[in-house]
Length: 158
Image 1 (cartoon, one colour):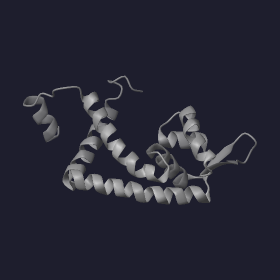
Image 2: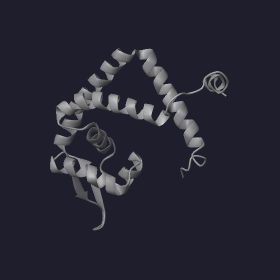
Image 3: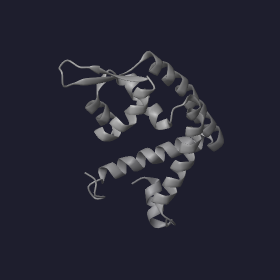
Image 4: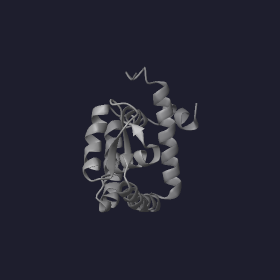
């Protein structure tokens, strides 16, 4: 048992809704990244998708959806704006039924531009919160994810 777990189970009683607090944090942090990455014409979700495609492509849609932990329909919906903008294309696979998704040259350039903005957002957040707080936050999130993944069946997850 970690010191945090031991202390919280005996001396500290959480107040308020954890889900609400996490959603509030996600909204504030997300807006911070959206404002910076948005200067490139991309939403942060589109930047993430484009980054995966640049790193992994050409890749089959089903494999990309698995890598990103999203459904095929969500992937398809999120791909459309990137394809329409000319940053991503679908290329024929080895047989008539398969397609590969890959970034175009413009897509690679857009990712590089957005990556600079993402880095600026990250550095600004680190400066505002302090590097030690960000490191602690990452550690707490990672530890919580590990615990919740291990106990997923208890929480109704498969």
